[in-house]
Image (tube, rainbow, N blue to C red; front, side, top):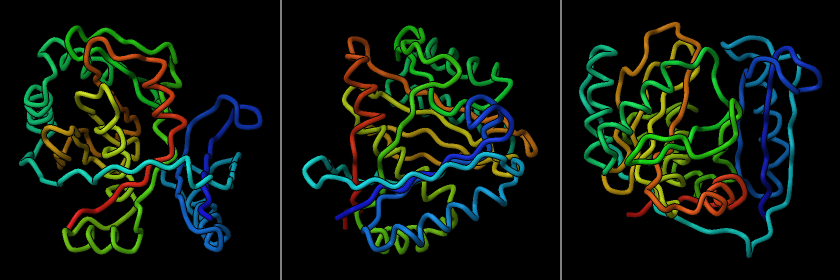
Length: 252
């Protein structure tokens, strides 16, 4: 039996409500690995560069085998970028190549640049008009309940490409689930970790396009946009993102 192990850490607020988001993580692991995984997440929450959390929640749940879907891992490639300006120009180009309109791409960048603190989830924008479609406010739509189908094999895949560490490991799994969601045109993301300036544009059409610089070093605000095709059923889309368990498979 598989277990879902999730961690959420924050600072301030009351019993985890409100306050500053510090860290989050999740894994889907064999039941016998749940305790070790939870302990690793606790260490991560207590030593995060965004601050020392005063609220840490760890949740462990069994995953019914019949509830799991699979999707392929997105192919990985990197765009050249040495500055934030170059990185954002490259990201905009990738969005357009994935089918996002210029107006929607510009609306996405404007929305992320206007953030004064990081959201826990993503804003969902129409890929043609750029209009925000979700009503989740500052929380956003969480993409959750996913992991690599073969964790050891996935780690070897990432190591062979020089992509070690939690950030790229987690980002590529999440980007793959998002890209293959019915209705997704593309995703734009950069991290809220101050020292991690790399971001990406993900899409089924273009793969995972890693961009080395998408924000200034030291910036603690990050964000995520899901661009969806016109006519996407938002109720089903949000349910897929927040409830559907997906294991991502590395294809030979």
